[in-house]
Amino acid sequence: MDKPTLETLGRHLQSLRLARGLSLSQLAADAGIAKSNLSRLEQGCGNPTLDTIWRLSLQLKVPFGDLIAPVNVAVGDHGVMVRLIDQGSDQPAVDAYWMSCAPFTERNAEAHAAGTVEAITLISGQLEVGNVGNIRLLRAGENHRFAADEPHLYRTGESWATALLTIVYQPAANSADVGTDVIVDPTGEAN
Image (cartoon, rainbow, N blue to C red; front, side, top):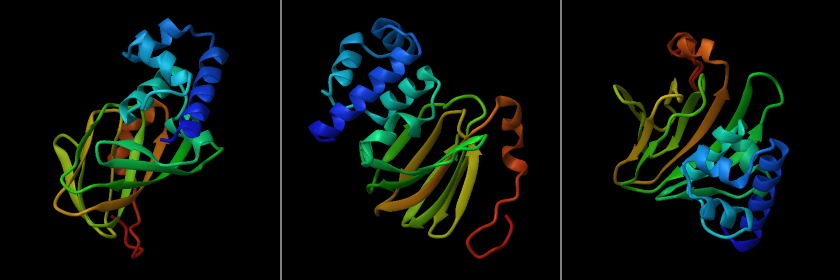
């Protein structure tokens, strides 16, 4: 991220922290990051990883998209870039992202908030995605839905992969329904 983007993110992060009555020390400890790193982020310095941004959003109890919405640029690290496309205003909260993964990239994502579900539709390339024990290899036009409140991964082979990613933040009581929903693929057939 460039300096103006980092400054925008930092100001927004600080305003969210203060609105929740959290000290810098408290948020840093709860998110598992150094207080000095959080201070630098709020000052518009540093280069936050996706995991750091996710941990902060979890501790601030806001969707990932709420935290990055003001920057309006792709964020990422280690070969994975995501850009917020849109956020719903209904309940459950829904974020939509464009995602790009470089060749030979493996991203091990931490568990998100309880009840969170991800649905991914591959646009190009090939991508392995899902929870341990429920990994699917996707090709262009294919999709997969999985519980994102468990650790999960995204892994590419020798080519770039791009995808549309939808994250649904729902109550934990509904997370058991992940495998029971009907998903319609781009051809209109139910999966």
